[in-house]
Length: 344
Image 1 (tube, rainbow, N blue to C red):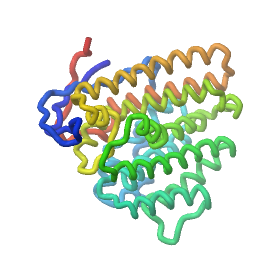
Image 2 (cartoon, rainbow, N blue to C red):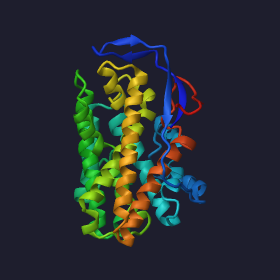
Image 3 (cartoon, rainbow, N blue to C red):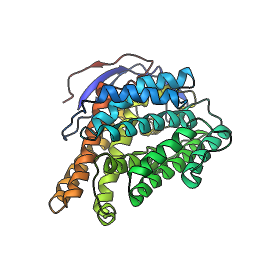
């Protein structure tokens, strides 16, 4: 792994959940995946059109949301995650990912969000899926979500759209767990966290959109195979836990920040560097397991299933390239990182 040097936060959680000074320099891993990567030539155009859509949809309603959107570079995310998708599909996906990240920030991640505001926001999003209509006083992101659902539904077979919406329903439910966790005094244990993170990351829905992006005719029987579902779980863990490392510094700075895997290791008494390393080791283990499972699956896979495996690999490598080269979403106010040589 390539590592990045980042000065540690001045205060960090300790085993007794108090705060203690920390002055060591942290080495942050940049996870390098073994899969090929590429980028659509339409990235800049997609990004520009996405920002226009965000403006028209009222998603850049305040300076906070505008700043998040500008730093996100979500058009580049889809260009790297789905490099061979059509321009039409890429634009829908860019709008979706921008909507998802902004709405997640607004209704779930912001320290200023109250419980009543979060409940109003999340139930409104669920009502779009259940009732296909917005409320009389739409909340932030509600009308844009209805538009996105209609677009995706018109482009996807019913069973495929149902898979995607199931993932989004689980994201909404897991978000409620995150809000409960945020307001309890003691941190949850790692197993509980992994369960919440598995669905709160939104990665399962993203993997369902791989099928849409590349027009893959994956049958329900193939999709629901246990080994295919295991591959999806491994990919989810790779993204979710590596994201915990990337977002560690910024989440630690939040006055009411959510716990992540790194922080939970710190609450167990580990140093910040050890906590980062433990999380990074788990990511590496999942990468190796994903590669091994994918190799086994390919031996007797249909053309559609091979396309789906390749699509997930492109998504994983594209997401990582976006983190390294494009987005400033997790840039900490603590310091600008500088690249170091790989650790032995």
